[in-house]
Image 1 (tube, rainbow, N blue to C red):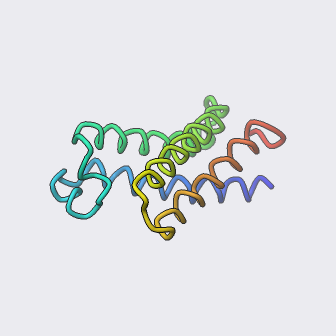
Image 2: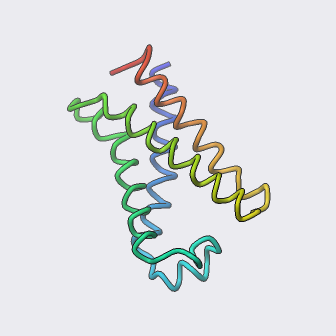
Length: 124
């Protein structure tokens, strides 16, 4: 089970890291051109969201690897699960196509699994 939780955390960390870096590194105008959701969002909020995603990705891996405050892995996963719930709510409100829900739903499932596993029967 430990291996499965590591795999879930790694996949989730990769997904949110890539999304966060995109929000931090891309010019806002270019991001708005590529992502419809970003058109009505203030640029600073986009950057904050990207920062939270990067921090979440780091929080999934760094505490476990270093052995320092490894309980933060479950907290980071729970925070990312909450973020995915908000993402899904925004997508539903915007009436986005069903295909847009796949990645956030998979990320939510992974985040809940990591949070429950690391906070419960399989801590580090």
